[in-house]
Length: 555
Image (cartoon, rainbow, N blue to C red; front, side):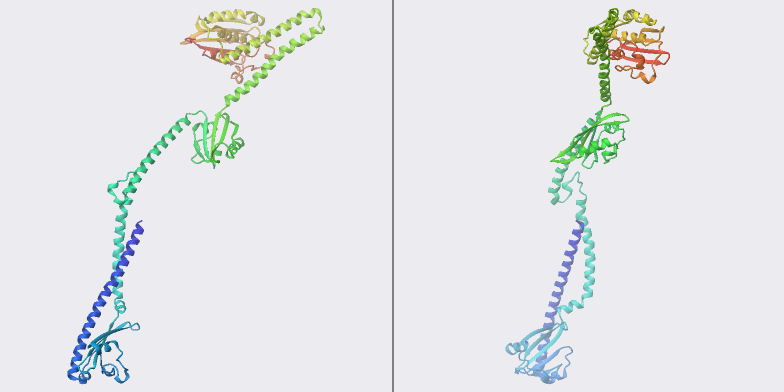
């Protein structure tokens, strides 16, 4: 804008100066021409008067300097000429000034010579005898006048141009300065050109709308950030060129990556082929799912294309931690397999013995022994089914809330007495210590917890070993501790002993009567009562199970 204003001012100044020079030159030249014509007319009249008085002698004896004097007869013949031989000059009756002088007494004319850039002016005066005295003078033409003053004109023009340039700079800056100083965020109409008022008014309104939109956008982004940052699942939004537009911290943490830089590619988060194929499928317009194994666990990747008007503008990726889900699925498959095996074993035995009895291949004296085997296997089957049912109820939290006051010491004493035949069979001695602690809870559940812990302390003990049940309390919690001096459990198995059908020593466990669900029932029973259970063991020194239950647990 400054350049345009400067250029415009310079052009207008140059044009004005040029017009002024031409105009002044024209005025000066016109004044000069009129004055020269008047002087020539005055001289011509004086010379004509002198010729009337003195005749040709005046012409011969007078020096006319730069003037050219010609005396012409009434017929147009040159009688005298101050510069040329009269005999060489032709008829002058056709000359304009001569013709006018012969008709009206005096006349004038001018002729311009482009060759010498000069103008000749003539004045003719008729005298008494009818002849004509003509006086001629030569002076510069307008072009010659301008050419003669060209140097001065150029200097003047240069000075004016310099002053004009300086003025143009100052004026253009003064004009543009208020525009440049406009505060676009808070335009002040009163401090600027009135012509800009409509623009500034629109700008102020536009600023208001933009400000409100930015505030709304900021609030939306803040809300989006708060929501996504509080998600356990990861969220990634990427454009059609895989550049990350938005990502929450859960996403890169679940993938075991670091926070990506602005504009980084989504492929920088994980370099595995599984992740790459999943993202590429989504970029191709197909919803994709995959399970990605990382050092932190299993991750489920859900990638969907983001479409607008039929075109793929990017993708949206959700990342879920499915480690526990995958482990539960593995446990479910293992549980199904183990249940099938545990059910199949007694049923196979019962079927085999029944088949032998049906076909009469059993000796009469062996029928009682085979019948006892069928009973034992049936009892094992019933126990397994009952344990599965109990565990299922604990899983589903479907056991009725029929809480009563239970004396844990007395209950432990009763269970030890109930297991006395089993203990005697292995020559294992049991001991109860502690104090009477009353707990309001489901008696069936707490009975199964203590029973299974004591049963395991007997079954997995060494012959001639011992176990101890101790009932005590700390503030707000009742403690049930069952310890034995058996072979113990290796450290690598401690974290898994509460899993269903998990066996530390499978070869030994098969020889021990049991369903393999006891400790799992203990764990879920304790969880049902709102407590915790832990196991500590040193191989060769025995195992200690500790159950903590809240004393103030209410129905």
